[in-house]
Image 1 (cartoon, helix red, strand yellow):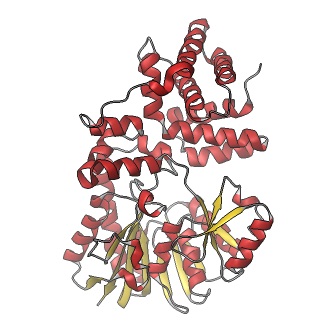
Image 2: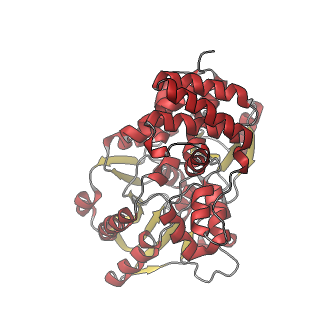
Image 3: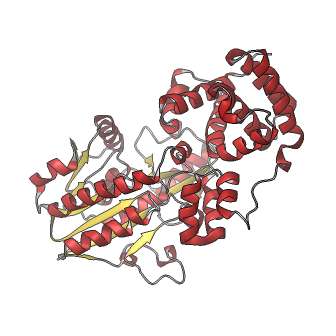
Length: 450
């Protein structure tokens, strides 16, 4: 029996993620475009790559329980073969375990020798026999180790979250991070009505739900190649998470205004602002990387928007040309991305505590530049997809201490009050959490210049 193309492709992608530093959410679509698979194999490859990355610690713990050699002493390819096989046995029960074992034993023959083939066969058979009975660290005695291992997050990050939210909340967040993120689209109100888009998609066999918080957002149940759906090429909608769309509601740009999006790529928020303005006025979208700037241009053209002008450059060095010229400035700052780990499961294994401190310095510098472009009476909106106070509240409070002409505004003017917890008293900032709101984890603050 030959190895299925889905398993072979999944292993190739995972090896490049670890050895070449590639990002799975970019590499996997590129690889599938170059090596197109049948729909069933494509779905399996996606499931294997993201599932194995999400559950990596738990898989390693299970493999180590049955292994006779330390996992870090095994060749890299063999480690991923064992992780893939263990994931498939424990999480994809529709596939007979005997077939799974045979597939990965065959795959091991291409990456090892007779000894590693025997190891793969013996270990995966043990997993198939008793894998779900492997004991994890005791949650009461060692909560951080238990959550980090069973729900596959770095222990240092789990410890941070435990100190802030406690065991139950942290466990719920980590569990949500290990669930596939919803596929959400934002309807372009300048080209289509939400009801019409939903009707067209349902007629195409797509199971569609309304968004929870934003009227223009629809949720598509199941996996979908959104670019292949009816209406996409015509610019009726674009992909955007509902939490990201909430940022646009807080910016609340008006027709005819001048708006600056300081870190705009890949353009989801930028195009949302243009749609809200009725494509009347001007949006300057600044993006450091040309590849992401081109993505903004492609999306702008597909959605039929003319009010957006893209500028490539470091916002900190180009901002001075727009001093006090903007009615709105959105700074969706580069961040650790701890709020989007369910979309970028490999990111959790790259991040370090030191990077959070480094990013906070960059965010403060960008915010200082953003303040300079806002008119008196204008608004500065700061957002991140981070859950960390050092990148969110602490950056904003330090900014306000050094910029006394800016004041925070009550976000309930633009957002439903139900977004906040019942005991919440501060409505000048919003922290979206994946397990509470079923959105990406976003932080949003709006400040007005007096």
